[in-house]
Length: 249
View 1 (cartoon, rainbow, N blue to C red):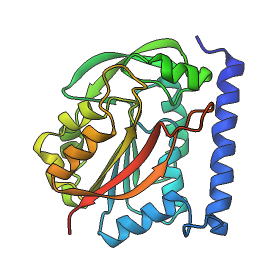
View 2: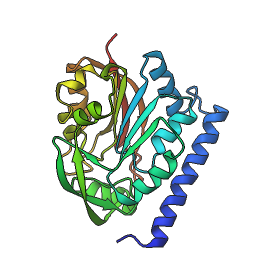
View 3: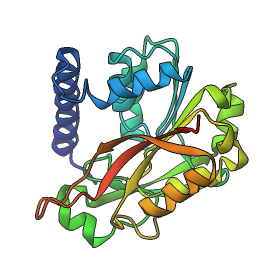
């Protein structure tokens, strides 16, 4: 189990990241006209996307940065881990258009076991590979939790979200293909989809960049924004990015 000191350190680290990113965003210091959240907010506004289904919300970093970037639409955040969900709830408190749900999201409804990472945000329903552990030693699994599972279809219906005006954001540490499977044909109607895309197998059995890219192209989407993510500390190899896909014009 994660010790209280480790948990506090992780919380402080994530809070510090948010503060630094927020300051950079407000100052517009990034050469490419603002941080990723700012570019994303502009993309959503341009395409009349007014709702975000935030799958794999962790402690609410994604929605918080979107809010700071000017996004004012609905957010429905899903997070299965009990500790992270408590922080997510606190962060969303007082925001009438931000809904939080403690659940994992997958192919079908039910219950499953999630592996809890020492850093929280690397937690996954899939086993972690040596490549991940070696590149990020602080990401090793330290516990597990039994969590409920729902589907994108159920979330869209239950929260009365209009697919064509919704961004489906999936940050589920290798479980993206299962989340998309649970959306079924509804994916083709969505206004935008954001996926965590890996070039290296960081979780056993996960789909990699090429497979996700090909699927999204077949479904009528194009890659609109790409944001660098996880890199190898040894040789700088890019191992993971975030990609925003929008419907072809």
